[in-house]
Structures are given as structure tokens and as C-alpha cells.
Image 1: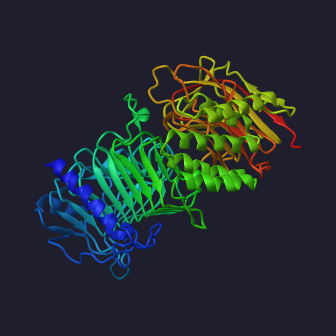
Image 2: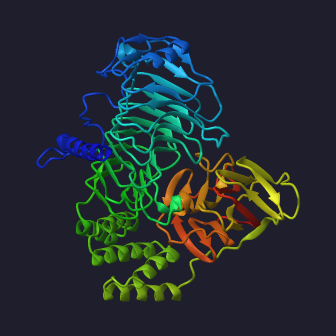
Image 3: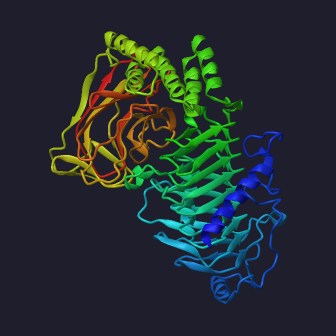
Length: 612
């Protein structure tokens, strides 16, 4: 029965997409502005389907709990405008099968009744007690909406049943999860809500999808870590359409994990995703698919504020087409050959950064080995022209080692490798002065270090942190260009290594903030991503595919060398970037470490150099 329901849901979603302007000959629209639902994005004023009464009218906690005990399928438990119900201390409040919990949000300016908790403990506030539950027109407020890695996890609503509908609600300050759908929860519809301030470090999911199919339509999201997230286990699928993603987030907006994250020896990232007609306003990556969907992923007709190479990350079995990018809404090219042609025109004009963006799109759109090789070769040439020789070399090596690449491309790659090897090495030539060192041969941390987050201590001559978000800075200022060197290792039994990441030129308040400086992430996103981030905005993530090896001591170096930024691991440069306006202010002279796994750190060295 549930399999049949799943198939029906897929057909319904495809029908909605076609009727909303994707049919042949219909006028194309991009982003959420042409919202076809008939109700405002995020709900509220102008929403049409609002209850004004119910079978039970409640204004206190006791009345609410009693009504939910008595309510039968088809009945409505109604909370009038202006009511505030304190649910502190409550957990797992069950909404019975077929029952609607309703308020008046959006009616004549009503914000909707407020149901809240101040419990700073781990709990799920509500859950469905059967199929076809609806929650509509209310405000739900948790105890904390910050980014801290707290000892407690607030959660709003969980379902494993069929037919949950959550609409026209405001859901906020539940630091772990807003609405969470688990195994068996098909035909779940989450639409026209305002979901925000769900952003606990390492967690923080506005909507969570696990082994079920969810439709996420016309919502407004802000201040979440992941607005939509999924562990990517087989059976996990979602459609996200006509959503407005506001500028504030702390990680990838729409997420689907892969097998490497779960440690299950697969590369599966769910069954399918359909992401279309959304507007993304944040500078962080918009979509991250960290594996291969079993069926497919279609991403189209979105308005991405980032350029193409910073908008979507995926491994395979995905189509990205007919999106627009940046404030100017530049239309994505239609196919690989069009992208290659556009990139070549910019390359010949000397605009290598923009050319690389088009070649990156060509790589995504490539359908043959020859097209993939050609796109990869042109990306490498752009890096070469930009003077980022170490990363260029890894790109050329990839082509040379790919049997399917045409012989001419492999020969061109070998020629460029020889030219790079004959040139000056891609490393700093400036004079560096050692200004700080620490080998941790003592019992206590001491005054030289300041903990920003997590649990740090010294153990057996090593600086040690635990699993989860951990950040620490050196309690000194280092003027001039900065370089940090250190060694890091996670135990061999660690299933999910993550983030051996230094930060330089920071304001010292945390690397995720606006004054975060340069964050060099090695093994980020569950050991799937290497990148350089500048004050919270990604500069570069196309890198050598080298990641953390559990049980191995990695030697890591990060530096600002004039306008060049380099992350070097075990002697090899894995990410490089240029910053034409490097951070050199007196307010950003702090150096530190950002970790996200059980990690042992040793032999920290800080060097500085006078700017030229």
C-alpha cells in the first residue's frame, strides 16, 4: 500500500511541475516569484485556507492536552488568536490520526497563537499519532535558536505516518530539527511556512527527510544550518519548489548526504530529488548532494545568487539546467557545447575566472567522455593562467590518468605538467619569521589558548578535542601575512572524519562569523570537501581529491602569501585561491583551529611576514 502511495506522490509532483509552467510552450519563470500556489510564500497575511473555529477550542495547556486525547478523525482542535500556551516540560505530544491542530495565522493581521517551550533539554515537542494529521495557522517556538553546540537538542514535530500536512505556520528556535519525517512518512506536505533559527552547529535542520518522500513547497527559510537535510539512506526523496531562501544560513541550504557520510560502503544519496523554482539569496552553497541518487536529481528554473560553480555540488546522476545565476540573473547555458563556447570566448578575452565558471558548467552538462575531458582540460588551463599552478597540476594529472580521455587531451595535459614542473614551484617565496610554537608538553591548556567552542584539553602531550564542533584560537595577535603549520590525527576507528581546518586573519569570535578570516577546510562536510572560505563566503572549492585518513598523522599548512591563499596537506597543495583585497586589518590578526571529529593536534607553528 505504501509503495503505491509513493508512486502516486511522484506522479502528483510531476503533474504539478508541468502545470506550473514547465510544459512545452509555456512561459519560463525562474525562482519563486511566479509562485503558482495561490497563497503567499511563507504563509501569513493573504493565506486563504484559515480556520476560525473548531470542534474543540483551547486556550491553556491542560485544555489542549485534553482536547487531543478526545479528538476523533476529521475533528479540529482550535487555538484562538492571541493565546499563548506554555508547553515547557512537555514532550512527544501526540496529535491523533485525522485530527487538525489549527490557529488563525494570517487572518486580519493575526500572527497566530503561540505555543512555546523554554525547556533546555533534549526532546521532541510533538509527534503524529496516525495518518492524515494537519498542523496549520500557528506559531511554535523552541527554547534556543543560536548556533552554539549546546548540550540539548530541541525538536518540534516528528512523523512516521502517511499524509502529514504542515502549512501556514511559523516554526523557530528549535535548535536541532523543525519538521522531521522518518521511515514510512509518505505524502508529507510542508508548505507556506516560515521556518527559521534552527541552526545548532553540526545539526540545525529546518526540514529533515529520512527514508520517506516529502513535498516542501512555498516556504520561507532563514537562519537554519541546512534548511532541508537528509541522511540520504535509500528511500529518501524530496521535492523543493517555490521556496524563498533568505540570506542567513551557516551551511549548505538544501542537502542530501551520501554513503561516505553514513559509513555504509555505498555512494548512495537517496532515491531522487526535484529542486526547482526556488530563490536562493545566501552566499553559501545552495545545493549539496554528497553522493549519487539511485534514481535521479533534477535541478532547474532556480534563481541562484551564486555563480554556477558555487551553486550546486554533486557526485553524479544529476541534471542541472535552465537556472539563472547572480543578481543579474544570467541564464545558464543549455548544453555542454554552448558552455564550452562561452568559456572559450571569455578565456580568449583573458577573463579566466568567469571562463572557469562556464567550463565548470560544461563539466556538469557533459554527456560523453570527450566532453568531460575537454571541460576538465579548459578548467586546468584557467588555473594555469591564474598562476594557481599546484591546483592546475592536479587537474592536468586527472586528465592524464583518465583512460577515457582523448589522446590529444592527455598529451596536452602532459605538456602542461612539464611546463609547471620546469617553472618556479607553487609555494611561498617570501621570508617568514617563526613567532609562536606549541608542542603541548604540559598538563593544562594555559593562557595562550582561548576556547571558542567544544571541549579542548591537553592529553599525553597533544591538544585534544572531542566529536562535534570544536574551535580554539591563539590568544595573541599576529600582524602581517600569516602562516600556520600543525599536525593532526583522528583515531583509526573514527567512522566519519571531518574538518582538520585552520583559520588565519580572524577576528577571534568564531570562523563562521563575518569576521571569521580565512578558513581552510580540509575534509569538510563529512570528509567530502576541501575549500577556502573568506569571512563566511566561499572563495574556492575545486581541489585535489585528497581527504582525511583516519589513523594517519597529517601535516597541514595554510598561508596568506600576498594575495595568494594555499592549503597544503602532506606536502601537496590541495586548494589555492587568489584574493585581490586580502584581509590585513588590525581587527583580524587571530589564528586558530576548527575541528569536527575526535582530533589530536601537535607541533603548532605560527609564522608571519611583512606585506610587500
